Image (cartoon, rainbow, N blue to C red; front, side, top):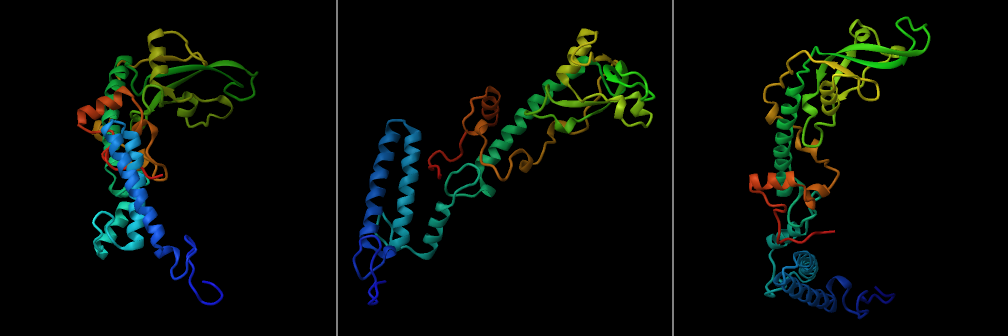
Length: 294
């Protein structure tokens, strides 16, 4: 507003209205909408979906700006009702997971589908893990030994490399999934000193073992690895807990609520993910005709 009380538009610099009601600005948004809509149609006809998605997104943005300014439908010119304006607000929403328009993370079908893909791949990974683990015969109670530098049982002996005996005491079954399986340290052992109530301290402990490390040690039958690990299988592998094949981390632990859709699920071409989608009848994107919002 000028010093004499006259309203001046910040867009066209004419008097009598402001930028929110400027007819020139509204027409600019309408022209852009038409141009972007035509471009999206052309790219869809030429099978360039990425470019089509981009112009669909741009056209939708211009539509929202025009209809918010004029309260009229950009296609028909009809006055919009309040409920229709609310619907436009929903279309304007951006999902914090997949960055698509028209929904929120809470209702995102891509998020739900990705979780189903994760569970399917995890079942496959667990079946393969169990098959390989059963071949080792190294269940809870199997003896293990490593060679490590320490000061002996009393803690006052000469610092030298000594063999430490221990026993497999735990398997972290819940940690095993499509992201953590054969290379994850899920086997835990305690030394004889720890089993007797002592703390590792100066005597040292046995690091967690992965299935690969365990398998190699069993197959070689000789000291292997950095600490000359040896495994003396008990003869039978331990069984996973009941329901293990169908019990997974909750969705919020798999997909961080503060992060958007992982590259692996959005763009990756991993064969296991593709096989999971085919088995489940799931598309990579549940909203193919809705543009991204950046």
